[in-house]
Length: 339
Ligand code: SAH
Image 1 (cartoon, rainbow, N blue to C red):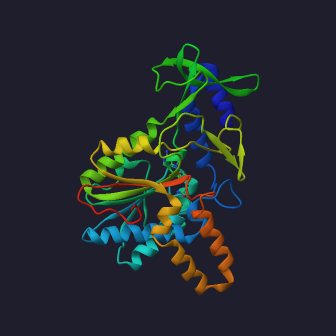
Image 2 (spheres, rainbow, N blue to C red):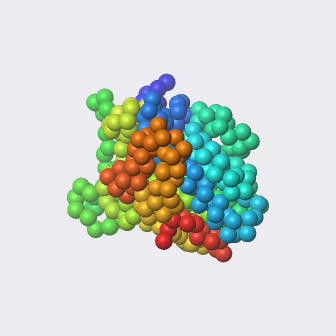
């Protein structure tokens, strides 16, 4: 049965489903059944644009680890995609003397297979609960939180309602469902999103860091301050598509609410730095110098390297919409790139 038929049947039997359930079921199917990354897929992420991204992440972690006294540590990645970021980061870390155990939180069998090919010796986890508890964690999550499900609330004439997804006249449609407390004062028609799944993950991560030591670098797209708006979007073959048709066949994401994640993590006792723009962060870590060095070593690739650098840092590309936030265990040093 296709996922569209399965969701239709579920709605027929039990009534409208939440936007979060629609997004969760669609993305679980989507990621489980393909490798969506790269030119031949649906979208391209920073580590797939250039090796410089993962290398600078690795150097930032290794430098912080070194200042923390070089304890035995674990590299953890949430939603590692093809394993490209981890492979580039681990190479840079090894050059700095850091060779951590590698633990990957990934639910997609298709992507686990791609990761296994690049990261021999890694361990896999369905969620954070089975990660090692006996050592500091060096955690990276790039474009992970944007794929976690969001609820949507709408301000109707007489107060706020959760939006629910129903099926009528051959299409999925959103309709106002159960009444909800007002999240903020706003005009009729305003949509507000919440992501309890993201909050649960960031809390668990922060709790682990506070207990075990280490830090997490969270890279994703969204505003630094919470705002209203319908940000749920679908991408297919590198173009925007309708999120309400062909669930499970296109990538669904929503803006990450950094302010909410920051507050949830801080409440568990970790220090927060950022969010700062990805462009400023990469430049503070030395991406311009790294690009020059790569170009000197391979002059024929100079144009390609400069194009990749520009795509990662330019304000009109990924430089400001994408942001980096660090969660830091008490008594651990601040990673570079946040001043
Ligand atoms: N970080 C990679 C891939 C980003 S795509 C990159 O930057 O290229 C999102 C990743 O998160 C995929 O690996 C996907 O399979 C994984 N993912 C999505 N939802 C997940 C969940 N609930 N639990 C674990 N992994 C998830």
